[in-house]
Length: 176
Length: 402
Image (cartoon, rainbow over all chains, first blue to last red):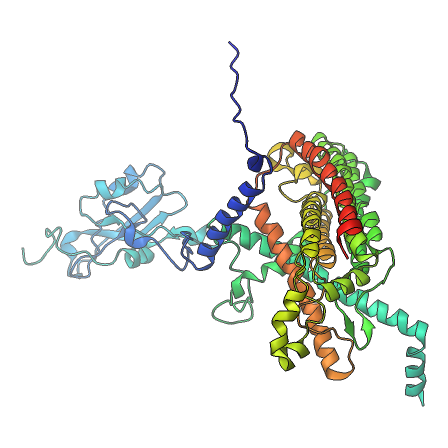
């Protein structure tokens, strides 16, 4: 069925366009004025201003390794994270802890621990699977590099990003 | 020995004319090209502000490249240089199907007319006793119309030579639009000639200096700084003396012709709301879809130079050119003459810049016309209005005005 669109009957002023143009110009002028005096702009100047404080509690950023209150690697090189990692971003080379080490009863620690940040999908399975609570997803999201090699986080970088977390697992503590 | 000879040669009338003209052209051309680049930047920045964005605000002085710690952003003014540089360094890609000769010719044909228009624009009064117009033509306004309407050839040719349907549609739209609005543009300023009695832009401006700007005619004969300083009691009587109802009556057709001319300039320069030849949503990029690199930049440059030339024409015809109330021209000798001459040039460019900002402001306010609306407005709106306006002005001049 044909539908006839009812066109509104325009007054003379409306047909001249000019009043509408002037009111439009006033609207855009007000926007311009607000923007010039920095009130109307909501754009954030990214590298200088960041939204980090508003990141949610559960935000999953870069996976990192943490050390405990004694400065010991939490990781015992069990390689569970390496096996669970869906994109196979983690490569661990375990080593035996020498017998003269104060932490010799832990037996193993990673010799090298690489996470390829080009592959990582930030799924958090490594954090979930870790029996020693050694690997954590922190809130770092701006991970850049000039080449592929730079994008691989080695053990040193991972510990630097992760820092120290205390008071979670005590099973290797001498006092126990 | 040699220096007086050279000076003597340089001050021979025709040699003097030649080298001053060359110097004036060189300076004006560079000023305008700089202004084009500044207008592009202003367009990007103002459009951002109008849409509550930030716009390009980073590119300034790259201190980090020179070993400094921090760049100086300079409100993003570096964009003026970087944008053309980017276009210059791009590959000038020519599609296989185009008609080579016309494809290369078209951008130049778009760019040249607006630059030629600059030749007759009076951009200042006098500097060192030299008139600040490159060519003081007696048919100045006709020259502007003749030359500026040539740019339609470039656009149509670009559309044709691209051998692609969207540019072709853009070119066709452009030619019909320009022809339609050329008429109302030409007719709308006939009242100006009838009142000023001249086609020479300098004489039109001199008339406006004596009688007030054509769109704002309210200060009177004999209203000068001397009067303001020495006879303060005479200010009000002098102002009131020229407020006659005859002048008020003559103001009406001039306002109409100003509006018609302004809108026609918008249509001539393909600015929104009349940018149908390059309507992105319908025609990809319009007539310059197939162009890249500096060829594309020439279209861009032509459009903005046309805006500047059009604003210059509006300023000269309706807004008093380089004149400003209570400011003398630069014809007196010595330092005051030089100072006021420079002030006059600054006043001209200030007026042009204000109009350019108005152009940009309009662009980011109004939506585009539909094609039939555009034609209807041109032929059924402005054409009869401009024609009737001539008769109204003639009647007022014949029967009412003293």
